Image (cartoon, rainbow, N blue to C red; front, side, top):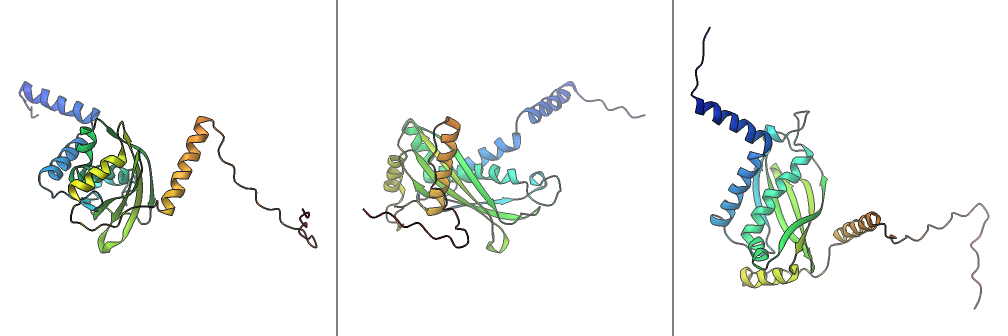
Length: 232
């Protein structure tokens, strides 16, 4: 029978690695540091109104229990890296921190159109679609081979302790001079409906009275006529 003898320090390192991987998502933090460093030091700075791209792969640790396609939760995880790349390249995060503010995700929604198979290379695009005094709205697309959009996500980034509008205006002056971008003056209709649904949900959780919709008219029975309004 063979006996394997290992030095004591090897056992300590192995035990430490097991504890580390068992309590911390090492791959996530390592990839996040790599993404931030690459965007900050090796990628070109862009305008806040530009669309950024991040290339990704669907690997075996991304698939669901059926081992056939990318797990739905992984899409939102991948957005963390796409947003980090966008924040660094536009200077959004650093300018918010310099103003004494912070950034937090307040809401997100995603629509899946077609699944991503294992070992598929895809691209995540990120762009700002609207902002107000407190919030920055971003849209992300998961684009697979052939240019097909596999999923679309919208995220609501809450800017804390500073003005989102002031930060965006500052970035427009710093990094967008000489570029031609149409101004974003109106909230897209689909985004407006999503914001309204969030407000209804918030009112429900606070116990406040939500705005009531107008009741639908009662269908007429056979032979029944509409009532004639009384004359003034």
